[in-house]
Image 1 (tube, rainbow, N blue to C red):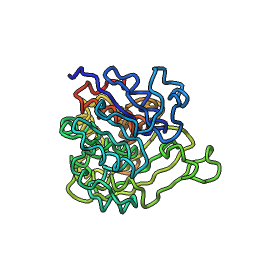
Image 2 (cartoon, one colour; image 1 turned 180 degrees about the vertical axis):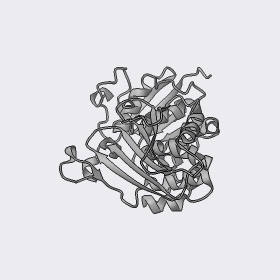
Image 3 (cartoon, rainbow, N blue to C red; image 1 turned 45 degrees about the vertical axis):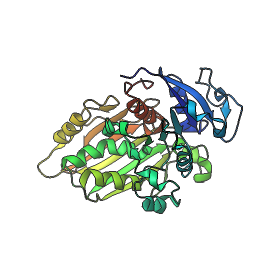
Image 4 (spheres, helix red, strand yellow; image 1 turned 120 degrees about the horizontal axis):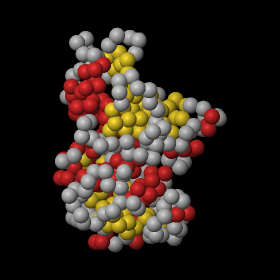
Length: 343
């Protein structure tokens, strides 16, 4: 395993995801944080925004002040549409690698990206130079790329369950229902502008009905695993809690397969994946045990309907769904132990 220390920059360091990222990176034994960048609050210390961060770190600065010759890796925790422009400008630095936590490089077809995000992609030629990376599925492939696209939080919780099952042909791929619930931090610091429903902190709110942006991601990745279109419904809900996701995935098994076989397939696939914890069959779970961790807990449960199962998947949207997964990707990219900075 590599022992060399790398110099990193975090762009968007003061957002919810950015702060979690800085906090985790500050504890990583082989990371030196050279610059923390944002558009506002220039000159302030990062501790002002997150009291957990104890290390002495650079003050917040503008991205234009970075000396790129002295940087190995740039994390981009920015609004959709921004990372593509920055990476396009900096891609000429051959030594420089990028981990993008927005949706800019998640969708392989720029026309589909525009359809779902209403943005003309500014770096179309670099999409093919990037890899969409849930680390559990890209262990060795990732090392060939300089641009890593970090998946969305909902799709991470869903694909850790669905991808192995879709590949196994155990289930009916035309009858899947996905019900996901997330803490409001998933919407970013401007969440109150995005969600104006009454009694925000005391209610559950269904949104993105019929068309949520993460569906484009799921469509693409499901098709990769089955070579055909998968028919599913997906509905996200906002919870009056700060962080965490619980996805409830309803599947129908083919006649000859039972719950033990489904559980066995997931257990076999994730056997060596340090951050995926498969619970005993019919275990009741929530997201309480995974908050502030990079873990994903999965529980396969029976329903009263024959051949119908519900699989629960719990993650922390800011860690396994974003910052922690980004560091996990970094560890693979630089040949570090996968758990470094995350355990």
